[in-house]
Length: 444
Ligand code: PLP
Image (cartoon, rainbow, N blue to C red; front, side):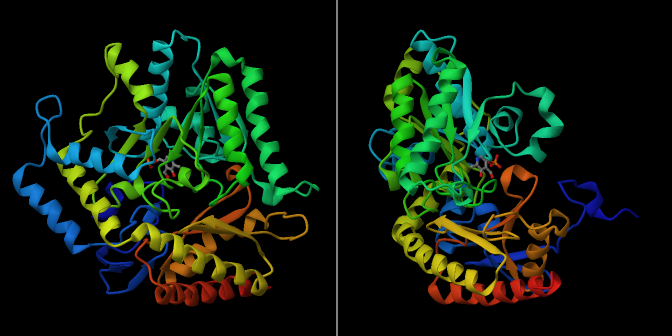
């Protein structure tokens, strides 16, 4: 008889144990083993698992109506969630369009930008500049913006090949510049690329304000953000912030953009927005962008499940929970505690070359040589090995090859925003134990 697991395929043939239930920052498998969800799944479960107040609100909506097509009915959950989202978002971003995930959000943002350009009489603007490394999703359009080789290579002929500029990985730079100068240096790459492509052809620049899985919580120098905004304005290029991972409080502000006082033209969100209670995402834009598109005949775009009342009731309950429990403030506070703990690891493990992040989106990266930041031997598969050692000990962390997917190892720690200082301590005990085991394996 075929094992039931063989019918279902994802990326891997290595099925994990069956999940039984979740509670707060913990997940339990069917054998009763407990795991700390140190990465909130894939940086999703921002308010923790099985929050009773949120479940009650979703169940109340379930009893009324689980679906009502948006062309047939207005619904309170979708309108209330849009209003709540705008209220939590900085001024200038006051129109919301719902989707069901991050890739959908990114593609929706680009399509909105394109229709806006048409209303401005700029039909040539179609090129989308993004960064390398980066991750913007796995549908073909979003993948075309993604700078991560293993994901792109098999599908490359099916994409246009959108231009990329280097992500501001200043931790690898060995020049004599100050951080501020480095930020400006990387921002100028955008200007150069716009000029190379011809400004009249460039539609948008898409960036993760704090990098996610592809770079491992990469934060640019402060000077980068303002200069990027200026360059976009100078050449009439729309600025899209992909806040699929960083949005909904993850970095200690509702949007990461707020850390630098930047108002992007369009923001893409998902992950923590539905927080694992429903597949949900959104794009948020200013009326300046949206109204001309509506006046010109409407946004020629939409998904069947977009704005459905069940997902929106979940999203609304999640945002209310965040506000009631002060979770965004907690993310900022606990982020500092976690960063201090991670920095302390650098004294203990010579192969940890960098620690970075913002709020509760943090990461550390392995190197073989601190002076050159050369990565560890890729054959060690460290990025997979440490995850397994931690998993066996009851801690879930998230890892990827850094540097575009071909070498390097970074690990993301991004627990639910409800985490306490004591629980961070608990997480670190397991992490150090896993790192000790890894150090022994590689003889360090
Ligand atoms: N953009 C960013 C920054 C992401 O981190 C992700 C997912 O990891 C996506 C887009 C794609 O989101 P989804 O997997 O929900 O399609």
